[in-house]
Figure 1 (cartoon, rainbow, N blue to C red):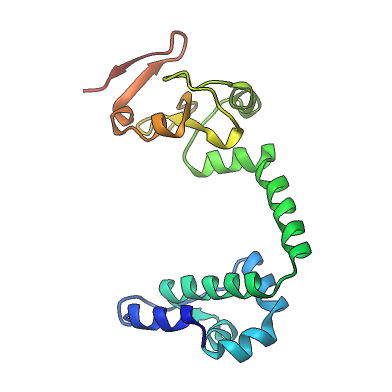
Figure 2 (figure 1 turned 90 degrees about the horizontal axis):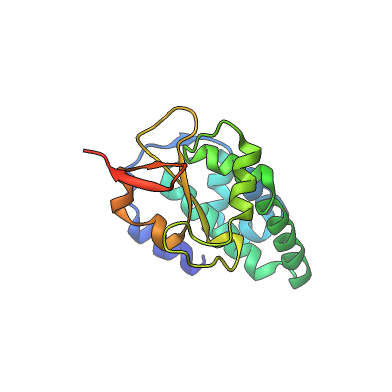
Length: 181
């Protein structure tokens, strides 16, 4: 058994969570199918859990870490590079970005113009720090409003994580903000 398996068994109290019957995500299912024999030999507990399809949330996390470690230890550098390029292409796509915003609760009347605004923004709209890459940009939104268009600014990570901004509304025309009481 690997180090991951030993550490995880000591930390988990299996009575704390309910077991669920579910399938692995497509990514982890592919890893399991690619490295099934290695996992069966090195981690028979993980293999058995995957084969039954019943686990609790801690066991799922453990399964995913074991699959990732198995991939890291056994995949060729060429395969890792190809997988990384595919991941970067998918993550940088417009469709992915918009779906991520929707999942986060961001609402927009026009997603194309919202994406263009985000893509073309060169500086943080609060502190004016220049963005070096798109990964530094955060689309800030009002958490109180749950109807159309709750977007306030395109911010850097530091400004977006300020707890004071959670209760601010903006006047989008002038980019001024005021505190909600």
